[in-house]
Amino acid sequence: MKIIEGRDIDLIYPFPKQELKRVFGWMRCYRTLLETTNFPKTEEDLAARFDSMPNMMTYGIIDKNNFLQVKHEVPLIGIYMVEQDSIVNGNVHVASTRKAWGSRLVDQAGQRLIQYAFDTCPNLTRITMTTIHTNAPAKALAKRLGFRYEGCLRDAITIKDVPSNMALFGLTRRDWDEYKLGEEIIEPVPIGKQELVHG
Image (cartoon, rainbow, N blue to C red; front, side):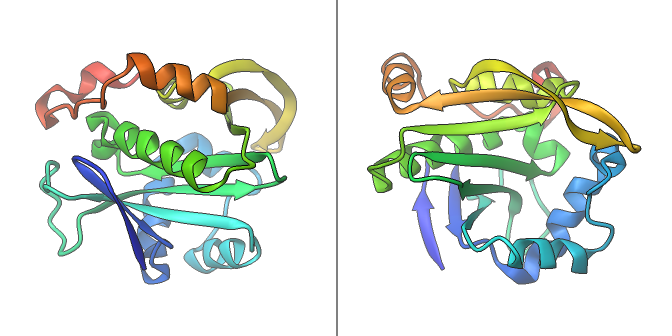
């Protein structure tokens, strides 16, 4: 296991397989995800899905200062997944606890992950993020990280067996270089004030 150090978070990779049950729990907190037709129905299904994607890189988000006061020996609060589908593009996915999402520690982890991806993959020219079109918090995260909205993927997913749209966001290496010039590390938000950052 390797560590990518950040200020308030660390990323560990690969994500420890024995903790996938936590990811399954985080994902089950989001009703719309549960209603997508291809959502894993069990922890075993989720593990099998991870095993079937050999190009998937997984990064656990560690709350290194226990800002969220997680009552667990390892303050693991989220996961970023990156699947490089071509030499030049990586697709990013994220899941976390609700408290972590509202704290903006997930944002800090995203900043660190993007920098790491562009630093270590010289051929990577862009990172893509897609989300269910109605998922306002995920769309807001993408924008805070410097992604640009690139359009709607019509009927790209099914929710309760009904075709639904996905929002497509892209971040190029050039976008990231410009973003870094004007942005500081995103500050964490104390637990009592998290409702202010959800969308």
